[in-house]
Image 1 (cartoon, helix red, strand yellow):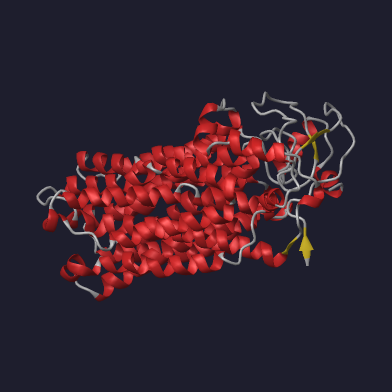
Image 2 (spheres, rainbow, N blue to C red):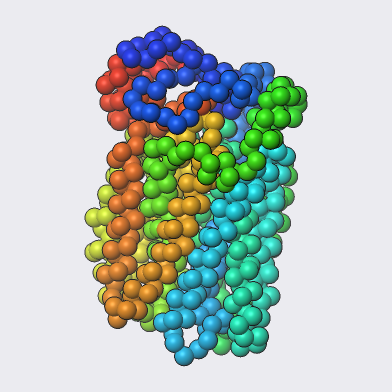
Length: 531
């Protein structure tokens, strides 16, 4: 069974303020009618010099190819988040004793969280380098490089000497490897998102995209399970002496498996067509010379409203992830003084629940739209954060588990399920890779890198109070909520359109229906029937 990835819809007649369709190039391999800028200024316009790929240029892809692309994206994201979660749990459980001076436990926690945040500083540089490389030599090759780099850095952490052995050199080496980890991770999710954008059927993007988001949950679960086994089977002295090295050294097995899976993945249809010589040589030369790298191109380009909408969608989810999946575990063990087994077990149980939450939210976004689901889940997070964090602070085990699991599902995993494909739909095909990479990584630096450090400092200064944690999670959730309210609906939007999303382009959900009615455009059913 074959399908043409993101097959373009048939031209429909002009309605209302919609003028005659203009032709625009298709990243999935065909030309497509384009909706003009009817409601807001857009910083991206049609460029006749862009590569024009004919319909014959893009080979058909089977359902098996789609499955491989989805599994590849899931596995790469799983390895990325497993690497980072291995570190975040180690930072919360043991690194404060291994890599930093003894005598000030509160400051050791702050320093451990700071080295966690360092990993996010190099992520935009990874997007800068690997983004441009992917446009020149192919995304499949770059995805090999990013996995290898992440896996190698994680493995080497397991061989580091401790502060008691080499002094200040220990945290310096730890920071270096965290920078390497972040450099490799900077293009991993963006690359997987772009790959699935080119593959996923229009009305199943939410569900397919959730498989990449499920990778974050799988990585978190894998890392938590490994640490859970270590904590359950070894006493603390053994863990501090050598047990902490096991998960980092063992990650090389996952890296090898991920590379093996990606060996059978077909190249991106767009890049494949270009390499086959079905795109003009002048257009290829333009791509190679003008698109020097992701970061430089994106920073030089004037940012429009869509970029900031995507930035704050990511900012809210990334901030909640850093607070809940990293700092909250440290709070449970270092401030509430509960057993380290509680910290690892609660993450494991919540990650298992996430295997239901993530695809369910993705599927619901295919039914009700991205905008509505973002508003609902962000609002739930804001409403529940104070009672749930208070429950955790009671130290009663059942309440700790209930509070953590509820906040993890609503504030982190549900938003992660929506994020990747929503951001792909927000941006036009002309700068999609550039804008996704920048919005993701710049938001992650500010939110995930800084959030746990600020929270640790505030909690220390407030004598261990839970209020700073709740306030910060609430603030992050409000960022996602605000972005969701002002953004247009994007579910089912034609991904071949060059420009960023505008009201009236989506075809899924009540907001899409409302926008199209206001602009006197065909109903979603009529638009889908014409596709």
